[in-house]
Amino acid sequence: MARTLISPSILSADFSKLGDEVRSIDAAGADWIHIDVMDGHFVPNITIGPGVVKALRPHSAKPFDVHLMISPIDNFIDAFADAGADIITVHPEAGPHLHRTIQRIKALGKKAGVSLNPATPAKMLDYVLEEIDLVLVMTVNPGFGGQKFIASQLRKIESIANQVAKKDLVVDIEVDGGIDAATAPQAIEAGATVLVAGTAAFRGGPENYAANIAALRGGA
Ligand SMILES: O=C(CO)[C@@H](O)[C@H](O)COP(=O)(O)O
Image 1 (cartoon, protein in one colour):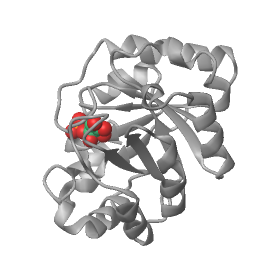
Image 2 (cartoon, protein in one colour; image 1 turned 90 degrees about the vertical axis):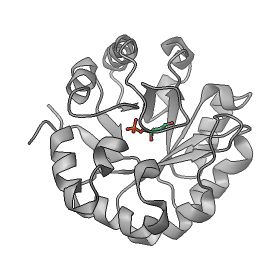
Image 3 (tube, protein in one colour; image 1 turned 90 degrees about the horizontal axis):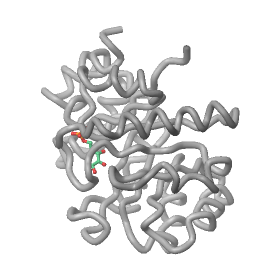
């Protein structure tokens, strides 16, 4: 069985020294760096833009896993690709033409992801699953770190994992929100291949990051 990837969300990092935080979490064993982009419109919080992504790029060679929680979406895809995103994930509700948005991400040479909010059904993927590299299942309502894991989403993860297997596709299933040492095994059991963790990854400062990541991997 393939190793589960860990993508720490820098939403929980110390924003006053983000470059150092990215270097520390990379050195601690992060597989990807998860970057949450929020606009205060699609979600009730504002975080960072392409300028910050560009400034962070020299601090890690690991894939930048950029989750766009912004609407409208299409006018910002190129900017995040230029800034150094490797994976660009969008929500179906963020623009009128999901298929077109995915095609644009891929035309820019980036991996394309689609994220589903807790109330968004897996059915939204019916006509795009073959086109994408990743599905991001939100196990909290997006906008903030430190929320409680919504267990009903495990069924959704299972259903997407079954679809991916049935169609013999190579699509990562990433899970995000309330992931810690207790919920990570449930998500993996349901079929998640990538875990996003903010609070649980950045807890306690840099000297704890390697242990935090190891705990998410099940202590391995
Ligand atoms: O996108 C989001 C929230 O919208 C997440 O990436 C959070 O940053 C995860 O934080 P924790 O739930 O792990 O604290």
